[in-house]
Structures are given as C-alpha cells and as structure tokens.
Amino acid sequence: MKLTLTAKIKILPTSEQEQPLQKTMQAYCDACNAVSEVIFKENTLVQAKLHKIIYLFL
Image 1 (cartoon, helix red, strand yellow):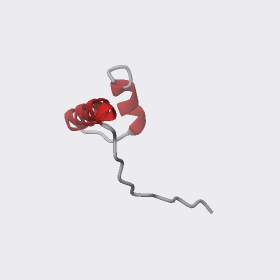
Image 2 (spheres, rainbow, N blue to C red; image 1 turned 120 degrees about the horizontal axis):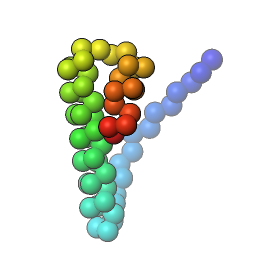
Image 3 (tube, helix red, strand yellow; image 1 turned 90 degrees about the vertical axis):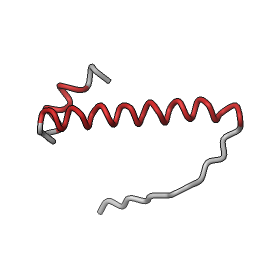
C-alpha cells in the first residue's frame, strides 16, 4: 500500500531570498499558463501528446 503525506508549511524567506523566490514563483506560474494554453488549443489531456508538444518549449 502506498501512502502519501502532504504538509502545508509557511516559509519565511530573508530579504535576500525574497526576490529570487518571487521570480521563481512567477516563472512557474508563466509555465503553467503556457501549458494551459496548449491544452485548450490542442483540446487534449493526453500526457504523451502534450509532452511532445511542450517539453522543448519549456
């Protein structure tokens, strides 16, 4: 039996860490939006097909 444990934590970045963290979160959000656009354009959720389309782009 496989068990998954999820923890919700609050991070407290230093002022030095805050800007790179914001950039990373924005890049992640942009990538998710790009993938969503492809999904709607191609009208598919087939992982293999999406992988071929998106992998090199991201």
